[in-house]
Image (tube, rainbow, N blue to C red):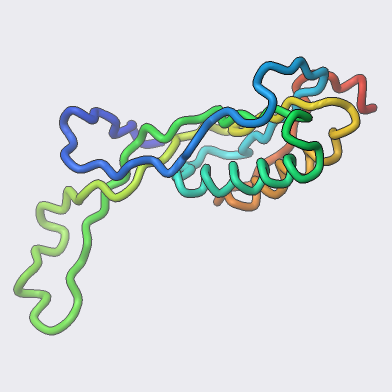
Length: 160
């Protein structure tokens, strides 16, 4: 894994993160079940992918269990800033550009660096909404460029 490029005081223009909120649903409720989405291998999850996963899972849970029937939490933050060395195209581009000479690049996005088996999203809910929470996490997993698995953290004995 690459060393994180995070020192914001040295980086000039950093695009803002698209993630609107990290905690959704009933934040004060006590839920017996906790289900998480974990990545199977190390990856970089962009802020766009995290926001898309949040929207997909939150909307599904809200439709199925109501506003107060769950709590959804994003457990990673996109610290690492991704750079890109944009290449010019068209006539005379070879005279304008240096190619890979001085190819440091400009900041274009931010990503969360995740390790294998790290939990990315967590849904707390009750036994009635267990299947819905698994489906919500499955829909969120489709937004990530890496295979994921669904893990029951707390209350596994309730759903056996």
